Image 1: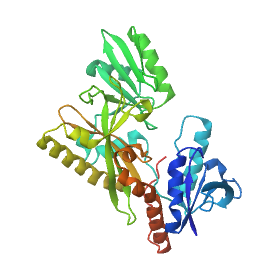
Image 2 (image 1 turned 180 degrees about the vertical axis):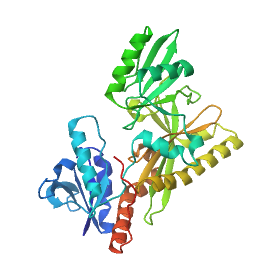
Image 3 (image 1 turned 180 degrees about the horizontal axis):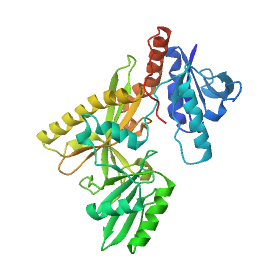
Length: 366
């Protein structure tokens, strides 16, 4: 029996999702296992991980070879363990005897450059790479409000809102506990603070846009796209994520809420609704094709769309390791498809390998 391996940095993370997948695996002739990158023996390449037992309904510790199909659900931090795990996953992606459901996307700057050279460039917020404190302050003086977004990572963590008021620098950061804000008096203090920030990680600079709903909550539309059992892209669903009032992020980690997209659309005129749905459909149909023309194969992407008060539409983020909370809350009827999708697509990849039809050309992202 063929096996599907789920790679994670923590065997207890996404446990419900992994178990739901494993419970359905037998109907596809696949057994499911899960492991951490560090669970692979450096010499024998044997994995010490867990397999799902259909007899007991539990994950059982055991040893096994690296499975031929892998599903990467690793979310990396800045710690040394994350860096080591990332290097191991990159090594696995180079192996000719292993296929990943999806090979992931590069950093946000590389992704932005790729989309800026595509028919979707009109949907992109003007973005620059943060290089020096002077550059950031110069742009801030022109725009009055900026967002600094980490070039790596997901979930909006590390995003900083900057403003200028009478020559002083205002700083706002959103956490799970609330909004942290401070004011720095004078240019030199501002330069020193930005210098320390840029030393920690790479940042992108964007103008701060008012993408809020009628309750002054930041909101976006999350759309989940996945490949089906024939390898074609399908939209699994969409929903609204709304952050806290006066906040910066619509992210669920900072206390955001989920609503069906119809709740927001119902407040629009028929013409406005038709226009927005048509634009979203255009983005959804073009985006996966563009990404796979420029990067290695993908299995799923979460697309975050911001909409301003004048109905300008912006692609805020594209994530190759999306969550499922929005879809499960707004469309319970999609539950079976969401849990079966990795197995359906994995089964198709295995069949293509047997027929000699699989290709994963183009440079793998770092």
